[in-house]
Image 1 (cartoon, rainbow, N blue to C red):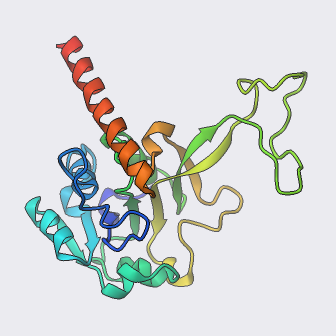
Image 2 (spheres, rainbow, N blue to C red):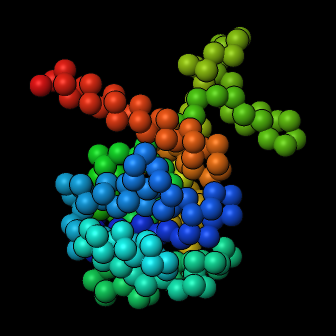
Length: 239
């Protein structure tokens, strides 16, 4: 079990995306992906505001953080343009205040991710003894490897492909990650990826909708508006 005070929460962002240029700061449903992500953390009921940092290089992103009074880690240009070195990308691993021994990294590319889900992940990480935690989605389907060999067990007694009967397979959700900070220098992010290291935390599949391409940006806006409308209607029914 960890102390809440030991766990930093970071949103890391940059504007040099090649597939969706400036996606973090572009208009997204009257806001931006980065601003929406920041507001989710600030709405948290379990994450102290002083534990929350954004790791950013460009001034436009710093302006959003300053608007909400969020701690800023001054990301270097090298970090913002590097995709190869773990220590460079996560250069904050040995530069945060010394009370932080762990980090929860939250993606701002997943606008449907809810604050309640972030809170659940954060609390689960604090409560566990293990060093790593990774958000995943539960996939109940049949899968084969590149040799054509089935890698999901065929259910006993099953004669048709009924996905309700298949054992779950877990897929990376690309939303949240929990790791020790001191292992990053040794190229260990979250865990060894062997023997349940890191442990897995299941999140709703719709909340893991990740924007990496222009078509996903467009579809993400539609889904986000639908989510807002759905929440508004539910609130009205409960009032």
